[in-house]
Image 1 (cartoon, one colour):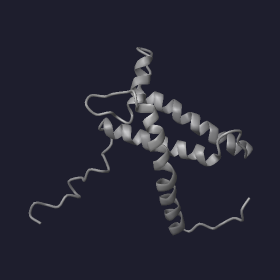
Image 2 (image 1 turned 30 degrees about the vertical axis):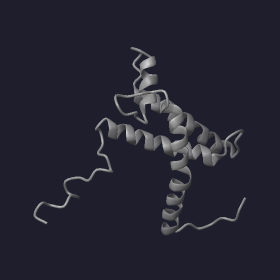
Image 3 (image 1 turned 180 degrees about the horizontal axis):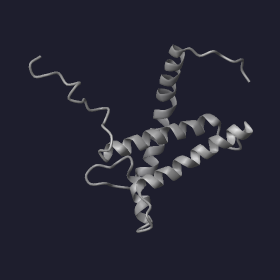
Image 4 (image 1 turned 180 degrees about the vertical axis):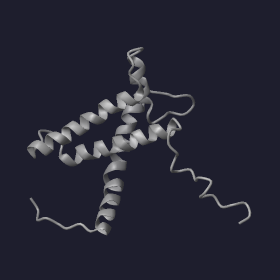
Length: 134
């Protein structure tokens, strides 16, 4: 193992940016296409449509898209907890497991935006819009 490095607040911000741009986005783009390729929602394909499609397969069993998401997310959490307990992995590296878990949190957030439960951070709020008098 490499010598321990002290990470400052600035270092951590740069680290997070590098992880998001270098690992999270590429993995989400690549894997996301695999899971949504055959699922069509209205005119535009939702990146999250696979969760709804799987929930619909359960019919009236009380499984909604958020429960489907939770099952997939917990699979990644469980694999991380396994690493925490043993400090070893049998297949995928711990970095890949963490990438998947973080991406699943972003997926949940995007599902909440789609359903209007939380605001879309890409859309400016009234407070952020310039006033008509400016």
